Image (cartoon, rainbow, N blue to C red):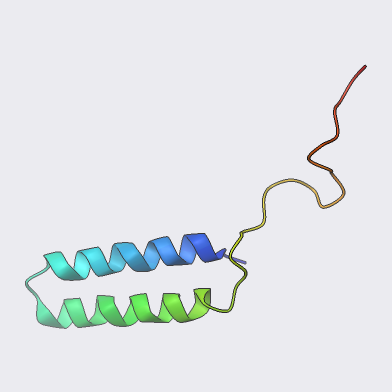
Length: 64
């Protein structure tokens, strides 16, 4: 599953492209897709899951 940060960043990039194009139809499509991505991102938790396994504590030290 894609994370909220990723989806939000992609939506932002689409909006930037929409502002730079002079093609109004393309701009409308980009804005529509950005809205779709934003609606997918909204219900997700604010923090994306990391790459660590769920049973690994971030405070554990290895070795010794």
